Image (cartoon, rainbow, N blue to C red; front, side, top):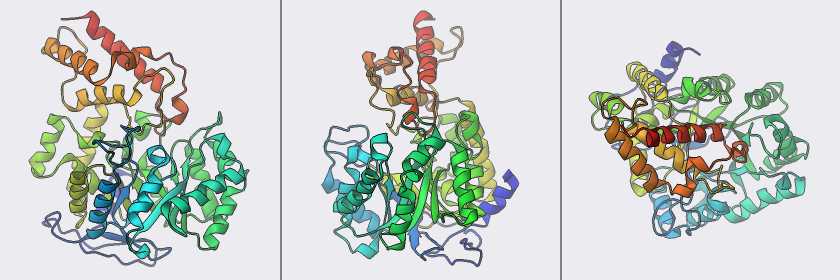
Length: 468
């Protein structure tokens, strides 16, 4: 799908009311956009799941960044207990404002996300929300059928429910257990009979929709869609990473990633609804450099970078819901407003976002989403912390020039090194990486983590050796 075709697709996907109708092609189609709508003055936009008729909120609540006692998120403060009272409060607000899709996993928040989600949601009528969770049998010790089945049964127990609305094969295409993406997929889901068993659970009503979340090897993605075409397995939905940077640049940023344009188009032409993850690319698209942000503010001064990114992710008509891991109430409120109702991107706005994507790509930041799957490092390195400091310097326009004779080099060099020592303890900095590659197999973005840490360390050493 070229850029012109995408513009046509995007601009035909306006949703200004609370619900949508399902066309004969099983894809929701909507009328013209109302560009003068003020965000937050209407009701939540919904998309219809053609398989079940579910009216799903365009904003989905990702339960992987739950708040913890003392402040912050569980992913950044894994030893702090989840603040259940705050989770309950935020879930209540979400439901009151039309959010009805809640996405969790047995592995989120050190295995406590499902329990916390179950506590918060069970206080409301079961038909008021949709629960999405995953078969997260990543470790080889969970590949035997008995162990994988236990994961599913435990999910029902933790979530305090008799059935799951949306069940995903978690992270298909990712390597694991010393196997490549394809081998790991067969070990996790096929050779042990678990995929067939999950189909049985769907037939028995314990799963209402069966799908998968995709990371990594595109051959696995293509195989699953081929099975769908052949009638071997029917996928009700699929979860993919989609944002304006990954639309055309995912593969260029990392050859092991797949451009969102390909993933979306392949799902869309089969009538498989897409659930979107990483609309902000781990927060990277929520904090743009001042020079890039100025271009967006010239167009719409009141809109944040995050609002632009969420509008982009929600506009395509084949999108069922857009997930956001919302630790703070202010993020929840802003995202609810953005989709109450959605203002779909116009063709001119889409062209602007493609230009912004090009500018962001050329900054060469590390494509880390701070998911923490790479942690803990056996040698104590704060991998996400190193990447976040480097990326923040880019987004803040404070990255020192790679030329010690350049203007502002001295001041920016001092700031970069001082901030680095303040944000990342010396014993956890990039220079302690020995290249063991333990982290690489766990990265959903397929980042060559040791190489990126080496790149950062080389740059830091250059700054230390060249004071001016």
